[in-house]
Image: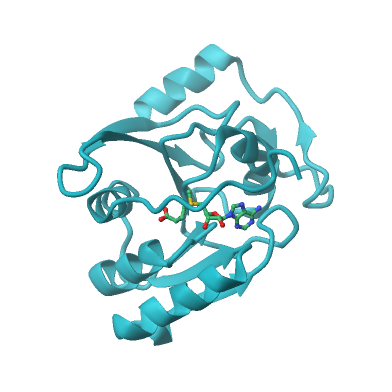
Amino acid sequence: MAGRVSPFVPTPWRVVREALRVADVKPGELVCDLGCGDGRFLVAAARDFGARAVGVEIRRDLVEKALFNAFKSRVAEFVKVLHGDILSMKLPKADVVTLYQLTSLNRLLAPKLSCQLPRGARVVSVDFKIPGWIPVKKFTVLDEESTGRWYDLYLYVVGLSDGLCRASGRGAEEPQRVRLRSPRRSFLLAREHR
Ligand SMILES: C[S@@+](CC[C@H](N)C(=O)[O-])C[C@H]1O[C@@H](n2cnc3c(N)ncnc32)[C@H](O)[C@@H]1O
């Protein structure tokens, strides 16, 4: 299990809203929080951005809490929560994915994100980078209300930030690493996207 499970540490609400804002979530889009904890990303996506939201969570008590919070916030009809390990299940075809996981888990998740998410999907990672991916933008957000600290938000775009080939026709669990372009060119493309 080493590196496969991160602890539950909720993202402050201000940072949640900012992460969804930088991902440019639009009404009707599907937002997926991988490791959704108490469901705050799902609630904010549905309530404040008019999105549909799906969470995946390994802890059953948190699955129940997330569902209860969606119900309490009157967005239950727009929110789904799946119980399971994000590394073993097929990812939903989300427009936006949010992540607050340790680098070790992000590393294991990277090929899956690359192979299973649609090209153009936006991925926002709180505090921890996705190893091997190039962010199109990095933001810092101060949470004055609760923790009093700065949070990093890394915005990635599938097909632009990742270097994995998804057109190889191989199975989703067997990504093939190919060099599409030089790292320098990737960096320039990422910058152009800002
Ligand atoms: C740092 S918390 C973030 C919670 C929520 N996304 C937020 O930002 O408030 C990480 C969450 O991911 C869950 N988690 C950790 N490893 C997981 C895995 N392999 N599969 C599914 N959920 C996982 C934890 O139980 C925890 O709720």
